[in-house]
Length: 230
Image (cartoon, rainbow, N blue to C red):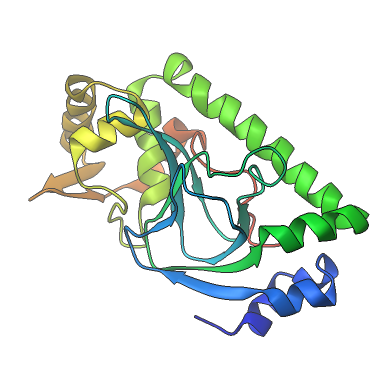
């Protein structure tokens, strides 16, 4: 993990945050599989994702998990809860070593009232998240399993094609809103076509280019641009 000052320069955070908020930024690191935020826990911090990748999901009463989206730097976590809720609405889990810069929500609320640019930015993020959530909730109705699987694989694989976040086909089926039988059928096809392999519980993408026409960025967050957008 780099220094806070390095991340502030990389993402131009000092153009958005006042000097006192920059001073209040605190680094947090998370290992693969570690929760960055847990649904139902008090929302105490606004988090800027500056390194790594994470997935956001909701857990239903029957124990199933439904994928909402993936996050990449630069993105913001916790702004949905700032003004309308006191607890996190989704669980966010690091799928690789990740780093965030945290700001106490009490400071953020006060700053937003006197900093129009910061408030406008947060409102823009809320609008983007709402649009992404609407799309995510309609994916299971509009897209075949092969499209959902292709998008999940591309969004969660590392540079060597290894899929991060889960190697369990049952859990993966829950995430993308498919039955195990539906998913297994597509997995068999992808394996037969040399697109992916699944051995000893490990999933690996062999030919990402063939997944790209199917994926359509279904689970990609619109905000993970790698740069602060004002």
